[in-house]
Image (tube, rainbow, N blue to C red; front, side, top):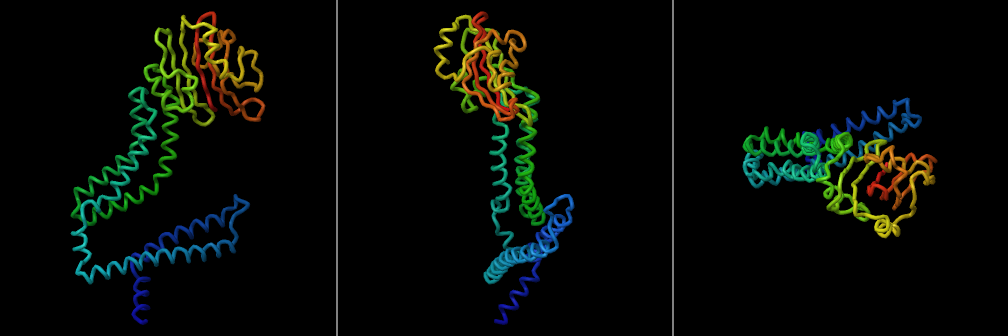
Length: 333
């Protein structure tokens, strides 16, 4: 019984317990104090809330820190019985175990980087470089950590420092990726995709468009224009394909899209909801010129309840029988 009490006292005095308990508890205490003294919030903590919060935080963090320190102490005792001193144990640790954490994180961040950069194909080289750099900075850093640890695998201090840096950086990744996604969208929005060469790729990776947009730009069409830009803040995500098809007739077009359409007519005839089709011909030669010469087949259209379509979406095709111009357009904002 006396040995158990003595062992518990030693655990409470151990460096690992003191670090695991006092560092998180200090952060917890500061955050609670800031919340209590924040006079800008009508629901700010009272002294009673502060006192109860500290008791709860103290108990929870104490139990967690003590449990981890106890397991650590038992493992150390077991190692000592087997004659494995900390220095000998370090020498026996495999290289893989030393680089394991940053290596796993480098793989994870590489996969997330793929997601962030998946639609950068076809953008100008400078723009694509910026997107790829934003997407893969965490992967590059973790890869550097792996290389440094591997090169210095026999130096305990170097390995420990870079493993700690890896852990700290991992906690910051959530915030980084939130900012990174926003930056990637901004870069793409201010540099919209206009190269028809990459039309099929962007239509393929966008669910729902292929039921209306052609999977490939038809052959023997002229004056092809393509536009893609992702939405940021109040700006909408937009896809547009325009071309002149001299072989297309209104009957052919009607047979293809009449059954899918929820409304058919000219733009000036569409009034409900107001403003939905204002950007239907954005990026085409028809914009502000001969928009009402087109017969629009509205496949899908919806607006919010603001009365002026502050937020909404449309998916449509249009055909100008006089000039044989064809427009596929969609926007979500």
